[in-house]
Amino acid sequence: METGSPEEGTTAGGEPVWTALRPGLLRLRRLLLVVWLGLIAVAAGVVLGLTAGPLWSAFALLPVAVAVWGWRVLGRNWRSWRYAERADDLLISRGVLWHEETVVPYGRMQLVEVTSGPVERRFGLATVQLHTAAAATDATIPGLDPAEAERLRDRLTELGEARSAGL
Image (cartoon, rainbow, N blue to C red; front, top):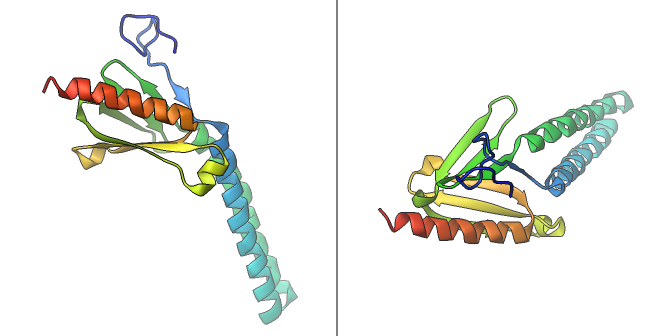
């Protein structure tokens, strides 16, 4: 981690050092998009072709068009996700049209979970979920390397315990 000032997690200009998500998350989401919309396109083509005639099966191209559009949208959304560890809090930034930045103070964290479902494990991914007393500040960081997720969980738990001890 690049640190250029006394405050941990910031550059010399005071800007946070942002960490992007792994590309495996984008591959996973695009694969799911293609699989589900591909199944819908095939089902729509077969059903419409058999019941309404071959001309109506052209409507099966609609899910294909949605998949092409979704491919680009998923890429933009994936690039918008990032997080930064600072001295007193964790920043999570996401969103393309509606940009959302969540600040979670270490002293307010109650629980830090690392989860990884079967599909995530296949792609070598894990998700860190932060729980606080205020439901509005619960935050999630998807698409992390499992080792990074565990490191982040341990660090956040340690910092949370140190900060809450002073309350």
